[in-house]
Image 1 (cartoon, protein in one colour):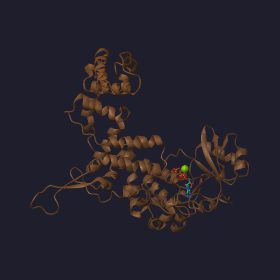
Image 2 (cartoon, helix red, strand yellow; image 1 turned 90 degrees about the vertical axis):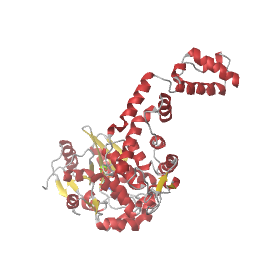
Image 3 (cartoon, rainbow, N blue to C red; image 1 turned 180 degrees about the vertical axis):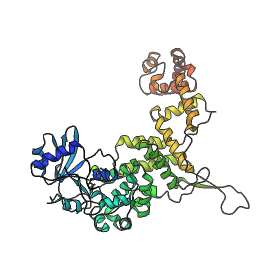
Length: 459
Ligand code: ATP
Ligand code: MG
C-alpha cells in the first residue's frame, strides 16, 4: 500500500499549509505507527514553512521549541508539533545541537534523523510515503538501523545509542548488526550526554512493554556499566535458596513482570533497583555438609535493602529524577523485605502499617509479586498476599491508633495535667502511641492521662 488514510484533522491542516504554497509531512513515531498499522496519538509534522510563517497561518500557536524551529499548533482540539525542515546541525559538545540550520527539502530533513524507521515521512494531504532509507523495510524486518554510518551518527549525538535501546524495549525490535556493533566504540560520546536527556530515554525504557530487552542490550554493549554501574555490578552475583538467577537477571525479570502487569513507573524502578545493595553486603555461610562437590552453603544479604536505598538514591539524584519519584521508589525498596505469617500479633501488623505507610501498601504488594516472579522466573500466585491483605483489613477495621492524631489525648491535654510545654509533650505522646499500638484497649482519655501522669513523674 502506498497511500495511507489519514484523519480529517490532518487533511484540514494540510490544506492550510498548501494554500500558502508550503509542503507539510507527517514524520517520526506516527509514520512508524501507520506502517505498523497501529493508532498514533502523537503527530509530529515537518514543513517547508518557517516558524514565523506557521505562526501566521494558525490562530493558536505556541512557540514551544522555537530555537529548534518547532512550534506547537492547536487545531480542532488536537495539538501538533510542527518543525521546519532542518539539516544535521553540529553537536560540538556531544550534548545538544548547537544551532538550527533550515533545510530546503524533506529528503535533507530525513537524512539528519537517527534511525531508518524514524526517517520516513508521509506527505499531506495525499498520504504518500517518502522513504529514502527503506524505513518501511526495516520496520517490517523489525530492525533498528542507523541512517548512514552508525559510528558517525552515534558519535555525533551520544544519546542515540540510548534511543536505540529505548526503541528496542518499546517495539520489541532488534538492533541491526552494524548499529549494535557500533555502540561499544562510542561510549565516550554517550558519557558526555546531559543526564536529563539520558533520564528521558531511561524512563521510556522502564515504561516500555519489554524493559529487559533494553537492559540486556545495554549490558552487551557496555552502556549499562557506563550509565548504571550499580546495576551492572549485579551480574554474576549468585544467590541460592529460592533464587534461580543471579541478582541482575532477577532484577530484570522482576522489572519485566512489573511491566507486563502494567505496574507504575515507581514499582518498575523499585523492582529494578531493590537488590542493588546485594553485591556489597553478601556473605557466604558454609553449611559444613561433608562429601559434596563444590562449596556447600548459602549466601546471606543482611540488610541489603538499606544499601540498595543508598545506591538507588545516588543513581536517581545523578539523573535528576523528580524528588517525589525518588522518594516513592526509595520507600518501596526500604520496605520490600517484610515476611508476614499468621503468628504476627495485631500490634505487629499495626507497627508494619506505621513503618510502611498505608498509602504505599498497594504498590509494595505489587513489588512483592514482581520480586517473587524474579525468583523462579514464573508468574507468582497473586493470591499469595491475600492472607496478609485480609489481616490488614481486619486490623484497620478494629480502628486501633496508627498515628498521634488517632490518640484519645493531645498535647494540650498533657500540658493541662502538668507536663511542661516543650519536647516532653512530643516524647510522651509517642510513648502513648507505642502503648496503644501494643494494646488498643488503652486508647481512652482517662487511661492515657493516667499513664501520661506516671511517665511525667519519671522525667
Ligand atoms: P515517540 O513515539 O516516542 O514520540 P518518536 O520517533 O516520535 O517516538 P521522538 O523522540 O519524539 O521520537 O523524536 C521525533 C523524531 O525526531 C524521531 O522520529 C527522529 O526522526 C527525530 N529525532 C529525535 N531525536 C533525535 C536524535 N537525537 N537524533 C536524530 N534524530 C532524532
Ligand atoms: Mg514523537
